[in-house]
Image 1 (tube, rainbow, N blue to C red):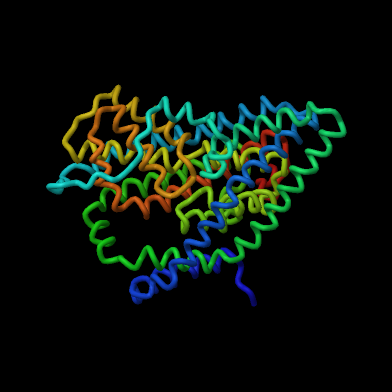
Image 2: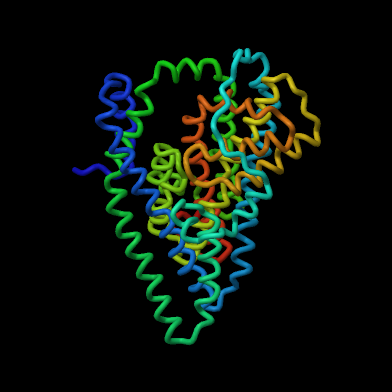
Amino acid sequence: MKLKLHWQILLALIFGGAAGILFPKGTPYISWLGDMFMNALSMLIVPIIFFSIVTGISGIISTGDDLRKLGLKTIGLYILTMIIAIITGLALVNLIQPGSGILLPESIVKPSIEYRSVRDIVIGFVPKNIVDALSKNYTFPVILLAFLAGLNVPKLPAEEKNLLICFFQSGFKLTLFVTKQIIALAPIGIFAIVMKQFSETSGFLLLIADMLKYVLTVSIGLAIHTFVWLPLLLRFGFRVNPWQHFRNMSTPLLTAFSTASSGAALPATLYAVEHKDGISPKVTNFTIPLGSAINMDGAALLECVAVIFIAQAYGISLTFLQLLLIAFTSLLCAIGSAGVPMAALVMMSLILNVVGLPLEGIGLVIGVDRILDMMRSAVNVYGDTCVAVMIAKTENETLPIDLPKK
């Protein structure tokens, strides 16, 4: 009997970790498979986002639905879930005080990171060269172009409109077909990725021991957000079974966790939301690609905790206004984070700069960022799927995960 894909991925995680610990010298012969798998997933991000948003928006407009209402609801719920995540992180980091008592090394290595101001981030929404933006997988320019295309295609004469809609729909179907073939190879790629990560496990575990309180603070915060707040919202706010929804999302969650990339899990997320939760293509194709760019629950929580942890480690007391500024900037930076590994560290530099904390403090957390990056990526994806369910219920859709009516 053939194992289901999520079980294959889980086994790949286990055996890849064991192989990395037991046979570290064999990593160079295997790691290239993981690199190829990640490249293949990255290759799909732009066409999936572009085709899905264009078809989603043009379909909504063509059927006469209120796009503004749907868009405002979606963005509003995404911001709500991120605010909940940030408040959770703020409460935990001030309660646990993970940075207190940390012995700073004599020299903290300052990571090589391109620091971006708020102005640069905003300007980057509109690229000088769209081809360059597409080649670099910049998410916001792709979404902007897709929005403009989706809004204006229905305004064309009937013949041109139908031709372009057919083209975009066919492109989306073709992209998903290719995606299924690549996702089928996920266990092999994930095995190679995890083996590479665990091949240096001795230093990794030593780092974890020194940073245990910080890792636990972030982990507890992510767990509370995933297993408490979001399920409560789904169950009591929208009358769906949160645990059945969680089981349905097992494949995209494992993919996001193992690759540390919410963008890499986008194909599997689209499939699971539509075919397992039963959400309409209209809602799925609008909410999930948009969420992969602007909804970063895990990143918002991680950035907030990390910045305050750095302040505690340096013995810097933060005022209430500074804490509010950190929370607000974490929200903006999470929205601006790309769904790629370690993007949160890039945005963290901006938050540190805004509140006047030493940028070198990033060196404290960069060593353990990989495992936390994996967890926050899974939370990012789960937040996207929960909002998709919420939007579907506000659109009066009947889902197989609905709670029985009393």
